[in-house]
Image (cartoon, rainbow, N blue to C red; front, side, top):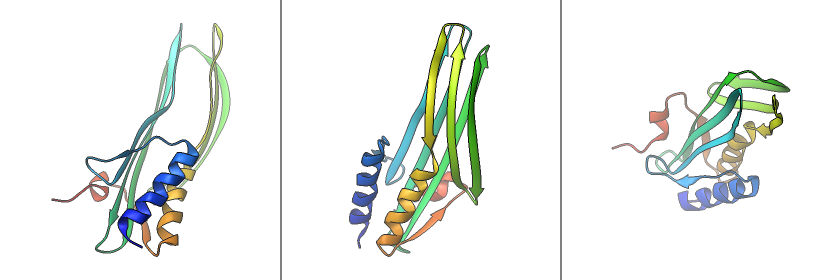
Length: 144
């Protein structure tokens, strides 16, 4: 299967998952999204996710780099759970957050970040391509 067909499969799967992506300037597909950006009178909390996906026709490999950044400040009450495992650079992370400020519930988030990489891996494998998670984002960017 050629590169455009694999990209189309990944894009279709991301659309079904509700994942916003762009055809990249630095890579074939890019994801830059905030899954959570909540503020309340005494604080805030954010969860940002970034990923680059490069399909290299030379070695028929899908390269994926990903990163999450969580930040928060202030007074709040909340709960939730988080499970995460990492295999190489792959993020397999389920997050559930319920955040309360003095005004009451200000945010609720449930997201499985592992589904994003799994989607890319499955599309690559089904197309006869290899899948590699990379630790340095330069390896998932256009060369040249």
